[in-house]
Amino acid sequence: GNLGTPSRDRRSFPRPHAIMRAASYARPLLTRAAKRGATAGLDPGTSSALPLPSIGPQISRTPGHPTFSATATRSYNASLRDLAVAPRPVNFGIKVVPERAAVVVERFGKFHKTLGAGIHLLIPLVDQIAYVWHLKEEAIPIPGQTAVTKDNVAISIDGVLYVRVTDPHLASYGVENPIYAVSQLAQTTMRSEIGKISLDKTFEERATLNSRIVALINEAANAWGLQCLRYEIRDIIPPPGIKQAMEMQAEAERRKRATVLESEAEREAAVNRAEGAKSAVMLNAEAEAEAIVVKAKATAVSLKVVGAELRTGDGREAARLRVAEQYLREFGNIAKAGNTVLLPADVGNPASMVAQAMAALGAVGGSGL
Image (cartoon, rainbow, N blue to C red):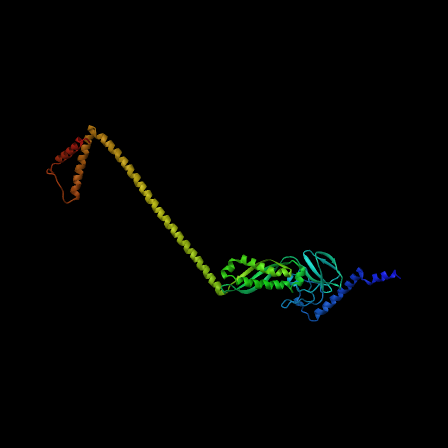
């Protein structure tokens, strides 16, 4: 009798093959129940983008978010936004978790453990797969919104938020739908930071604005198991009137730069012309000075030659003849140019005039020339 008791105790616990058989029986039942739920009036057009196995109807737990149909489930390829509100997968006893993914398991409604990459054995009907998360970085678009700058200009601004799940437990139980929460936090933080700077600084300090938004988001997102890696402002759209004023300002700035450049070009041209004229005057003066020097040297050489010739007899005779010729020629020019003419007493005797010129030259020659 004592030997039979342990055998009865062993039969009282389910064996592994019995668990697997029960799971295989439960799967078609759940599938048929899901199909009946889908035909009972659930919206089939609100399922996730990926074709996934059916697991039964599930309604979104967050107001304002899509309602998932009976054919939706948690898939590792889905986005974090879909994973946050997707229905719970069915526990078939064996769970294979791919790389860069995490599965949160509950036992009797209480958190039990987090499954990492690999194969895991679970107890059907006891363990439930509560949440499925992928641990990869994901870009979350932040829709456009209106923000008021420090100088009271309403602008439309949107961006892209890059986040990833760092703690699946906190992402599951820290907040309801953490992706929706971090998106709302990004919008409010962006409006708050835009209100601290003017419109011109909004365009100039994008990098500083992005870093401040990331720091403020991480202060709250760490408690939700999320990490904000970076935030990028995508478009900043001012009102039409402000945009037109900015375009006019930009056009005025371009005209101003063009005028300044034109005036600088004219100034440089005037300086260049003045420097050219200065150089021309200096060159002309240098040329005239060199010409005078050359002429003076030529005159000195000619006078030296003439003086040397005058010391000879033939040279003096030639000089007398030259002076007489010049005397007669200049006397004739005086008679042509003026109305009043000074005539010598014996103007009718040219020989006497020549004799006077020769006498004058002789007097000059006698003085040592």
